Length: 249
Ligand code: PXP
Image (cartoon, rainbow, N blue to C red; front, side, top):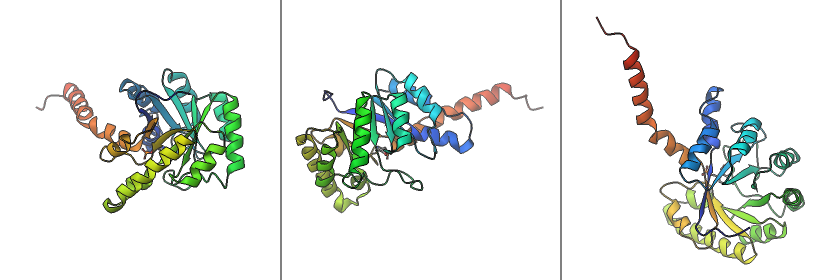
């Protein structure tokens, strides 16, 4: 692996699929979301295949693998047998190992690297053996970084949710915590990414931290995309209706 010249942006398109699942139909299609994200300059596409398949499903993942080339496909997943086997079959460029609880709304904290060391190291070994780079999603603290380096993973993704959710008085402290973790992880020979909870108001201070390889962002981009496209979507519908409608007598 090499450090990119500028910080990369991986776009998580899970919530395009969340919107599709709201009606159980076929649109909006996360594959189209990925295509447009790549056209917009995304350096990578992330999908999280969850045990309950609440947004991305197996078919999405297979087709995503066919579609996404030239930028990295990042499969976010729990380090469980089913998902490791799926990754080995699909072969994304990278896989981010996250904790997963069935009832959580989103990934809530980093992986417990010390507590799950054996399971994580085994997953890293299998994935690396198949040419898939591995990133561990961890809390920005010393112990997590130390243990992550021992698993053999190439990268970590530092959880920025604590920074994103901090009130004004604690934000600077949380940012400094991320910066310290970046330095520690880089010193341990890891490539360092960050993500979770980043949006158009809070991304700049994080993007300005030295030593980061990439940022992984999902919800805020999909939310902006829905609103940014609203005017155009309504005018297109109005035009269709106007064209088809009968003159009022
Ligand atoms: N990184 C990881 C490991 C995640 O689990 C998520 C959420 O799926 C993200 C980044 C993106 O977070 P958000 O949707 O808040 O931008």
